[in-house]
Amino acid sequence: MKNQFFLSHRRPLIIGICLFLLLTGVFFGYLSWQSKKIPPAPTPPPSAGCTGDADCSTGYECKSGICTEKEIIPPPSAGCTGDADCSTGYECKSGICTEKEIIPPPSAGDETANWKTYQDTDYGFEIKYPSNWTTFEETPKTSVMGINIPTLKVTLSSPREGGNDIFQEHIVILASFLPIKASLNQASDFTLDQVKTVVKDLTIIASIDTTFLNLPARKVIITGKINEVNVKESLIFILNGNKSYAIICAAEATKYQNYLNIFNKIIETFKLI
Image (cartoon, rainbow, N blue to C red; front, side):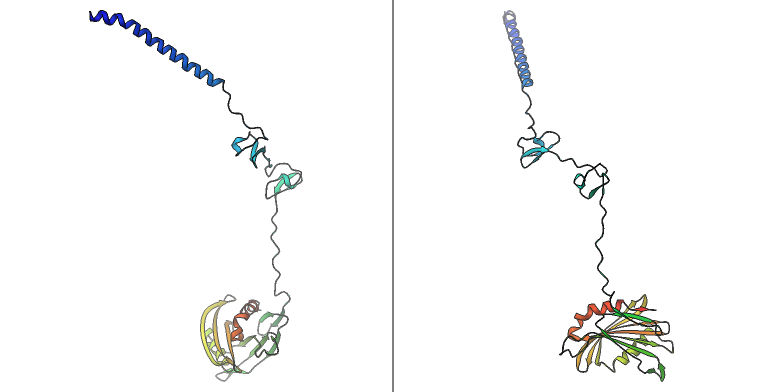
C-alpha cells in the first residue's frame, strides 16, 4: 500500500521540479540577454569635463578639468621648425632636435693678473704683490759662527689704512746662500734668531712640518712686539739646494685675521726660478 501511494505521488513531484529548473534557466538567460543590450559608459569627448587622464580618450589628457589633446614633443632626433618643437635640453638646428651645447660660465678673472712682480735671478725666486703695495730691498750682513751668509731681504708693505695707522702690515722674503750644509730645522732656527732681534717678547705658538712648492717646509706662528705694537706673524721656511728661504707675514695682532686672505694669495705666487 505504501509503495503504491509513493508511486502515485512521485510523478507530479518530478514534473514540478523539471518545470522549476526550466523556468529558472529562462529567467537567467533573459537577464544575460538584457545585460548585453546595455552599452558601456561613453568616454567623454575631448572637450568634456574630467577629473583625471583616465576620463579622457586616447591621445587626450585632463588639464584644468577639461580633456585636451596631449602635446606631442618630438624625440631628440625628430624634425623641427624651432626650439619649441624639441624636448627640454634640446634645440632645433638645421631642422633636427639636437642636444644643447652647455657652455660653462666664464671663469673669474685672475686677481693677480695686474699685480706687480718682484724677481731676483741671483737668489732664484719671484713673487707677485698688489699694485698699491710698495717694495724695499736690502742686503743685511748676516753670519753664523763667523761665516758670512749672503742674504737678500725684500719687504712688501701694504698701504697705510689712515693717518692713525701705526703699523704697516707686510711680507718679508729672506733668501740666503748657505756656505755650509744645514738641515731645514737648523736654517729655520737661524732665521728665528734673526727675527728675535726685531720682534721682542717673541713667543712661538705653533710649529708645523709641512710642504711648500713640493719641498719639505716648516711653518711657525709667533706673537710678540715691534716698537711696542702687538704683532702676529707666520713664517714659512724651505731649502732648495744651497739656498734657504723664509717668507714672513706680519700684521698687527688684532688685524692678522683680516690680512690672512691677502697674505695667502701673495704667498701662492711665490716661485723658485
